Amino acid sequence: MQIVDFRPEHAGAFKALNEAWISKYFTLEPKDREVLSDPQGKILEPGGRIFMALDEAGEPVGCVALQALRDGGFEVAKMTTVERVRGQGVGRALMQRCVDVARELGAPRLYIETNSSLAPALALYRAFGFQELAPAETPYARCDVWLELRL
Image (cartoon, rainbow, N blue to C red):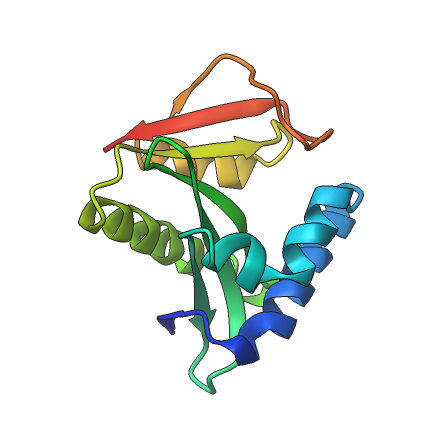
């Protein structure tokens, strides 16, 4: 397994991976559709990054985005892996890449909006040192947990 920077040919996989997990647990929301339909314009061009996890055959098995925030930090978003690789450290590798790149870029923090029902994801975030924040305004109806990792 390897973690690589997003390339245009990953756009379909990025969208499919995220639509699959969001639809399984929640409902695709307008903001999801907007971001997933245009990762170049909504994530990369404003200064964000996307990382893809590829299996030994080069097939995408996971992804994560860093969306640029006004304060120079990044929101960790659209993180998922396919069912068959869950529990194999792919999510941990994706999160480590986010932390490493954010630190390299001098970001002051990483921020996450998530849901309390996503226990494995919350455990991963907390293992990296993310701390809970007070609720904030969000475009996502499903969001009921806000986290931050000061870098």
